[in-house]
Image (cartoon, rainbow, N blue to C red; front, side, top):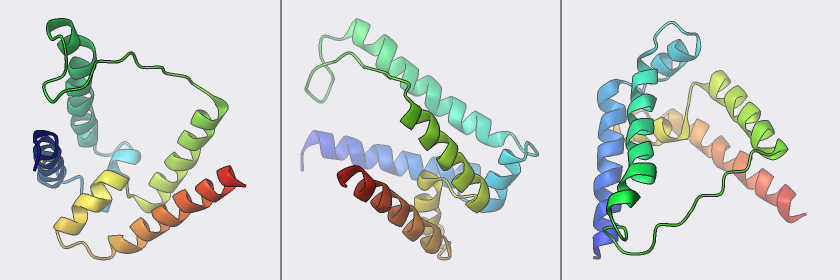
Amino acid sequence: MNTRNIATYVGGILFGFGLAYSGMTKQEIVLNFLRFDDLGLMFVMGGAAVVTFLAINVVPKFMAQPLLGGLFKPRISVLTRNTLLGALIFGVGWGISGQCPGSAVASLGMGNWPVIIGLAFMFIGAYLRGMLVKG
């Protein structure tokens, strides 16, 4: 087992534990957030955004290369019609189901077995999009 895998495992454990601890693995909490009844999810996403901002924009200024090897590379961010349309479709699906992919997977660890149906259809949707791109 290499260091990169260990970092991925630790990150995954922290991610799942944080989602479960904050209650974001419950569909009703996600739906309450989307209705602006409970803005707690904003703090969860904000915490992730701050950590990501620091890791991408600040850390490379103090280090020659990433801790786990490789290189720091510039990011190319392009806002396209597909990005906007995908965000809209994702938002509709999220709003209807109350399931975000990360919290849906983490909720399986909490014994929320009905979420498997939503996850299955997420995979089907991604598969269908992949088929459209190939065709």
